[in-house]
Amino acid sequence: MDASLTHWINAAAGISLLLDRTMITISQIGVPLMVIAVALQWWSRTDRSHVRHACLSAGLSFLLGLAINQAILLFVHRIRPYDAGVTHLLIAPSADWSFPSDHATASMAIVAAFAMQAMPRRTLALLVLASVICWSRIFIGTHYVSDVIGGAATAAIGALAVRLTYRENSRLDAFATRIL
Image 1 (cartoon, rainbow, N blue to C red):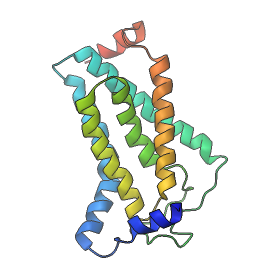
Image 2 (image 1 turned 90 degrees about the vertical axis):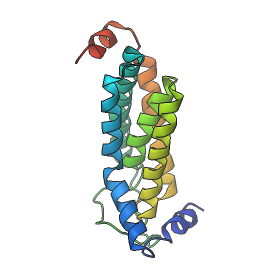
Image 3 (image 1 turned 120 degrees about the vertical axis):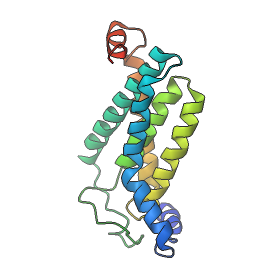
Image 4 (image 1 turned 120 degrees about the horizontal axis):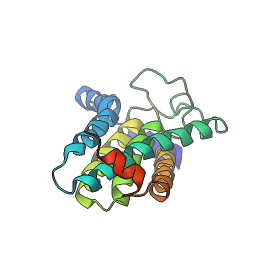
């Protein structure tokens, strides 16, 4: 079912040059745009210390999620869907294994961190962007659907670990949120 769903999403690749280029662009710059969006919130005028805590939590969740992925890659060696003949690849091939998706982890870690800080409007906006990034990774042929789901799971684990260990209004948080 995973290969079938992945193939179905990727089936539109190569039909429209505009759609292909749009998905490639989203795949390439989506995560950096999310990072910039989070960084710009540092200067929020409303509930500044809470927003700053959320920004720091998002950054820590992002890094921890990617670290979890690196540990998984030591044990799970899943070939890319284009190597298995499931998808048509629109970008240069990747040198690492397919599971889990780093793009999904990075983008969903940001979403999970903001969700855990009870910031619904920001979370929804970030979720829309993260979902499009995840979809683009399947569309361009570089990941299976389950790779993206796995990346979202590692993001959630990373964000939960940060939520449980990095407390708002702690001494460290008070120091970090006063920067700039």
